[in-house]
Image (cartoon, rainbow, N blue to C red; front, side, top):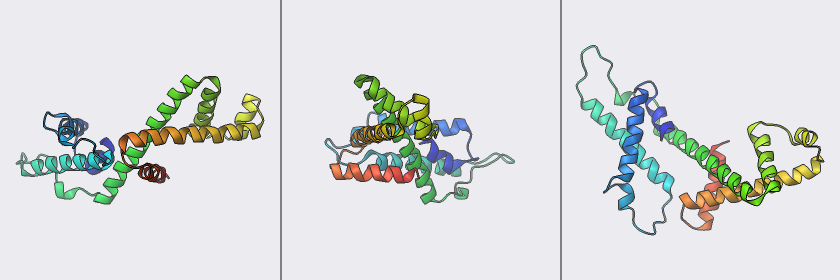
Length: 194
């Protein structure tokens, strides 16, 4: 939400006004007669498009309200028509932030599962963290850990599969559709991060 609003209003609203808009989105969802209350039971729609639509509508409402408000002479005004970003670039900012959040959630889930599964799973989780967060090559990690690089490559492949399973679980929660839709959403999320 913040990524979308920041991209939409960069330099036009204060951080406090942006946070107020984020709170408006939460209210839109959680209010007694809000978005979540009106969702039909057993819905099949993905959550991301719904969230995007609500954030966009809140942004438009705020922009229209500010455009109607009379500005104090000499004061800085908010020009809703002057929003420089196209809807496509705003959608991309939202989607990229969504993909990053889902990946963090999947990593958190993989870490929690690794803690349940024991030392070997924790080591694989750490291996992925070193490779992807710190960009340390597997041969370097193999030297540090005093393990053969071939063995570590196999463990990395297993760790990636564990991450993919965690990612599918997270996406399935946000996208309660058919397994094919979950797989498609996983591929799309990875593409958004390239």
